[in-house]
Length: 60
Image 1 (tube, one colour):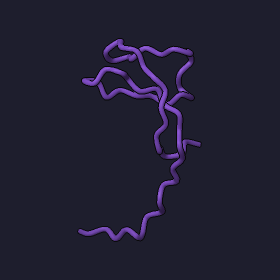
Image 2: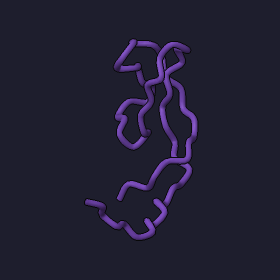
Image 3: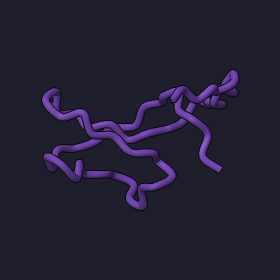
Image 4: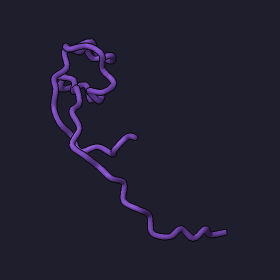
């Protein structure tokens, strides 16, 4: 049985500040809004993280 889906609305995106892991082998990152520390440590590999911007879906 096939389900017909109409055209999907595009998901709005905006430039968002994130913390990104500095370890090249780790791909961990998190939104700045979900971080409480000024200097963040990666929860996966415990390396330092640095701020950068990414185009991400808007969270309301």
